Image (cartoon, rainbow, N blue to C red; front, top):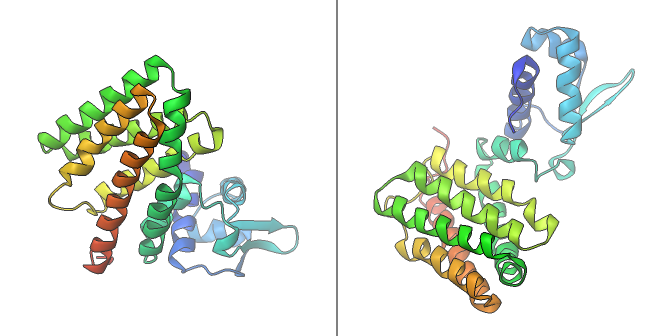
Length: 238
């Protein structure tokens, strides 16, 4: 969930500066610097720093100030951190990392879902896959992304693995970002779109190996799309 209010705006602006490298690891800010830079009260500045600390992008110490941490220490699974990285000059690295994470995790989640999902969840997966096909057929990109995100959220949760389930937000950030940053191919991969129904039907039938293989084809296809777009320069900032 995005932060609201003035302190949320400050958090977002500082986060984007961090992801872009404008503020570098080891740099120190004082609360007074945050107040002056963003024209906010000390209370708002302190709350913004508290939120940034929770994302592990900075540390705050008395008489030292607010120190920027190296990216390796950040909570890289935080949806807002992912968004900052996807809108930064380093977006290509973030896109590759997310694509590789999906390839590593989602086929295993599909196999587990075939074992653990209850009948209602199996029906919901099929419904989301059908909605995805309908949106693709009608050229409805917004509807397609919404159905795709819903499908993968239900699938990851249905795995019965709580850690997999929490990756649903990560997947959704990637899907939404590819739409918002115009990182979808002009021609949708219809085989990958139809593959979601193959996954859903395999899960519904309790066929774990088939579900995993069908899901692997989807995420491998998505990774190839990302690589092709990166090679074509689609990720350059405008």
